[in-house]
Image 1 (cartoon, rainbow, N blue to C red):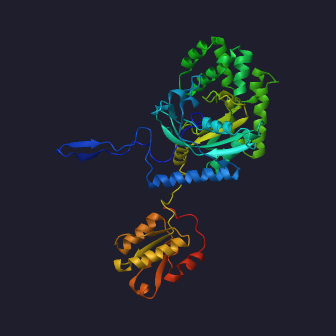
Image 2: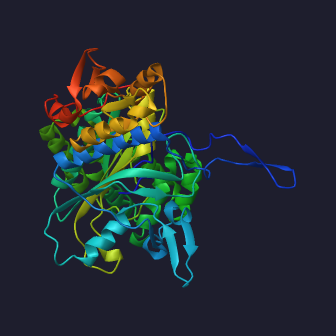
Image 3: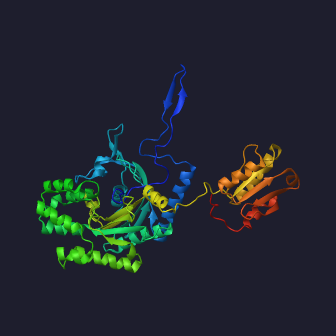
Amino acid sequence: MDQEQKSQSAGGGEGRTSAAVTQVKSEGKQQAMDLNPPRGTRDFYPEDMALRSWLFGRWRETARLYGFEEYDAPVLESEELYVRKAGEDVTQQLYSMEDRSGRKLALRPEMTPSLARMVLARQGSLALPLKWYSIPQCWRYERTTRGRRREHYQWNLDVWGAQGLTAEAELLGAAVGFMGNIGLTSEEVGVKVSTRSVLSELLVDKLGLAPDRFASTCVLIDKLDKLPQEEVRTALEEQGLTPADADVLFSTLALKDLDALAKVLGDDSAAVRELKELFRLGTAYGYADWLVLDLTVVPGLAYYTGVVFEGFDRSGELRAIFGGGRYDKLLGSFGGEDLPAAGFGFGDAVIVELLKMNGKLPALARTEVQAVVFPFDEDLRETAMGAAAALRGAGMATDLVLDKKKTKWAFKHAEKLGAHYLVFIAPTEAAEGMARVKDLDSGEEENVPLAGLAEWVAARPPRSEPKLE
């Protein structure tokens, strides 16, 4: 699901931190070369990759627990997949290009259209309901802010073929389950929920807005958290709302409980029934304390048709953490037969910012190395190579010291990598066909036969996680 509404995000730094380097031309002149990545993008150094891999691992584990299958699609798609007529920001934020055959292409700004294309291609053969997830890299040319950049990764979960609110309840359960898994609580994060039906009943049924202007009006309402209210009011009046209509709209969006909403829309309102059902299901799942009624949640993508939701930082420092909702009519817009669907997108940058802000960013080892093999001198290098090969063959991630180093350096190197064992290939022990192994966790040492390293590994208690830095 898209991540403007579904939030934006990513690990690592802010993407423009490198200094320039000086190069010397052949004629003797100096030229400074900017080593920064393109604005709004990032380099991932090993420490950044460790964090990104940890985050992606938690996403994948949550998806597995909830029974989702992983898929992927090209980062380069046909431009027409994203160009719609509702005035969505995504259309103006495309990284577009034309290939040598004249095809108009774009780097994907969101994953949902690619998913819709894939579902449409096999619509007649897919077993429904299907539950799919992906972790795509997405691109948007927009202003960069804290937790928002021009490229980001996001966790997309989607359910196709389930008509009822059970799909939304399952998706919210996965989002809340992930946040709990990484140590966030309902005191730090909440989930704003609403339904597109509120605006449909209010704008079209009660205020008489032309139905063909509904989608573009929703896009304007989504800008209330980005633009002054009077600027949005002027744009709404250009859509056909009177000043009095705009007043009714703004006062309704400010409501915070379902009883007050029922007084505006009526006791028989389908939108009110839908929201009551969602809160009931949230209670059944056990995450009702995360849910907050907020009628201002109006995702900026026109294809949403029902329940919409958005994760938010309760301190108010960050923008949306994740977001999504129901989009039952997307396939129809691509010329196919509509199919019930719901999903969300969870960006990587904003969740990292949130963890930093709450002091819950994990301290991670940069590698999964379990053992470091250290030859005391070059005469023992071949023996050390054999020892490293034996450890690796037995399934233990092993780093071999490649240059002549001192013992003190080997200890620091093992500590930096987060290794559990330092395997010394020393002259005396090697002459006896042994390696001296130091357990860096306990401090204990033992001599292990070089020919028996595989058996030694098999006897070790499992240590699936590397030590923390």
